[in-house]
Length: 180
Image 1 (cartoon, one colour):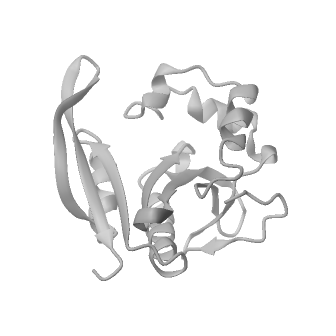
Image 2 (image 1 turned 30 degrees about the vertical axis):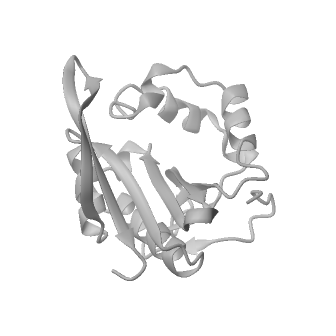
C-alpha cells in the first residue's frame, strides 16, 4: 500500500492514534530514537547508524507495497511516541508487526500496549487478515507482556538466535488469528 501524504488513514486507540508515517516525521527526535543504544537495545537497528537520508529511503521502501509504516501519536497533544510496522503477505492473509516506542517518558505507561492492540485489531478486522504475528527476544520482557496482553499466543522459538550484551537469547514468536 502506498503511504498517502494527506494522511486520511487514522487508527484510533484509547490513548494513542496511528497515522501513516510521512517525510515530516523524520525529525531529529525520531533519528535520536533510532540511534539511541538504550531504545534499540533489543532491536537489530542498534547495528546501524541512521541518518535523514537512510530514514527517507526506508520510508520510500513502503511505496507500492502492501506493507504499512505508522507514526504512533499520543491523544490530546499529538506527541510522537514511536513507530509501528506491519509487513503484509496478501497471498497468505498474514502480517508481521513491529513497534518502537522511542519517547522514553512514555515507557511503562501503557501507550505501547494501546498502540499494539489497536493495530492488531485493525489488521484483523479492517484488513481482514487471518493471522498477525510478531517476535521478540526472551530478554525483552516489556514486549513479551504487550504481545500476551493483546491476546497473542506463543507459537514457537528460535533458540539462542541472537546475542545481546554478550549473551545468547531466544527469539519468541507469537500470533493471533482473526477467529481467536
